[in-house]
Length: 335
Image (cartoon, rainbow, N blue to C red):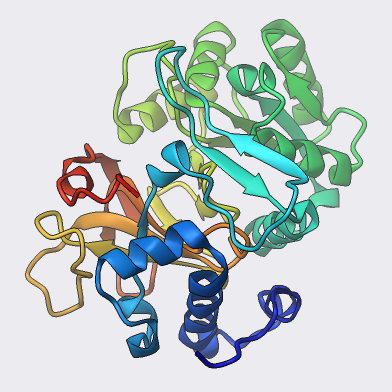
């Protein structure tokens, strides 16, 4: 096998490459992860794929996201600086993401946030994430905590159930015309909106998804309609991220998500989990696959359980969740 760049070289290039070279870098990372990630290598081998035949991003095998529940998905040998863990019920098995370089995660999400929302120091950032604050290993909490720290605003901070304090804080910030980001888990934003409706002219409301068993699941459009009515705003923003990824995508309020240069979404067929949809396909929607170049030390090629629609400019829409029967049927979990 050819000699591929070291992880030190690759980690530097993740933040310094021309977007036209995305496929080239993705293929290099694939070769690196095939070489240094035993679980991913066994997954590729059991599919009888010759890594030397991979020439473009669409040919790269995508690892089912459920492997993060059942295996230690790790590229190179290292002691993790952090372990991000998904939320779940006491009966469920949570995903675990072993993090070698927390600095890489921080640099990546800061660059991603500022690409869409500008300098963090221009914002007052309020985190309404009660279910996540109860856990010390949430990647979302790490992200919002760092955004709060970098904002430098005296009122930036987390709120758990202090809705009265949050309402008072928002009222004060609105009077000051301070640009504010209220980022929250869906059920908490709905609870707060029902208890303290208000007109927000200088506040961006961003939901991160998730009812976490607190409320009946409702579609994103209905969530946004309720929040828009309560806060008298025209748009509700959204963040698309997950424990298994180190990159995020953002929607400015129309339900269409946009990625950074280090993240790319492809769709696989609902009928054939190994077939990537192309612009000429009759199928207009499928299941979301994500290339996350920042996932250098785990796996950058993730087959999620989210149904979606992809647009020609690379933006995408999330249509809901699907079960995992297509992947389970391949009998690959025995790895």
